[in-house]
Length: 347
Ligand SMILES: *Cc1c(COP(=O)(O)O)cnc(C)c1O
Image (cartoon, rainbow, N blue to C red; front, side):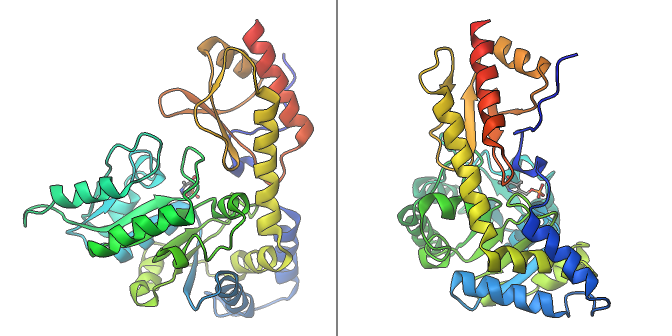
């Protein structure tokens, strides 16, 4: 039997809980009894910490995962007789089993083809033109993913341009930030600069892939748009009764700076991995490395060799091998994977 690799890079949610998040759970538990359903000091402080992080008076909510964050945020922003515009590789469309459509209770997703996984103003305008008849489900909201599912970044200027198009057409702009921290780390900007200052109305802010056990936040920069969110979250089974075990880690991650350090580390490991593979014949990067993901075009035989060696990875977007690096990625294991990839191409 081949030796099992010591660590896997199939996804950043393969990782354990980072120390700052885990310690916070232990400490919040040691405090004994506390009010349930978010009526506790950790939850209030975590909401405040997120408002401070974004430097604005947003409405903040916590749910168990990213699918719920997206589906409930989109349902809050989109009436059942309207539609949601997303790219054709958006997690909300490909990987949520229809949760956005389900929670909206009738909305459609419009997914114009977006060759590099990034939405454009032209694509949004085309969707609006196509759905002009009173019989069509006219769009009400656009959702973009930052970084995208294929690891690319929108610059603040690109987001501003999309937001302007949305607002000119009466649409709100939602951002799926399952890995927002990686985008902030990579762009070296403030969280505000790529969200509300660029025109984003609501955000799904990922905690799980950043190093927490569980729990993503939903941030409505436009408070008026958050009406009904808390009720939908409860109806959807997404209000943790022991909320402090989601929010104490959030507070600790932000106060300690771990949210950004973890993301910087993941991004650095992705760059290391790409550097280890630079110039190797027989493989190509499907997209440039801009965050914590590396997407490789590898021959089928090479992928099989890697699987036999015990490496796990997803193939997405029609056969692209995806590697994602989390807070705990060990540089020596990153190098070992790269070495096995190089060897698999020479076999
Ligand atoms: C992981 C992910 C989510 C959330 O997924 P859950 O498994 O529900 O936490 C949402 N959007 C993107 C782009 C993701 O990668």
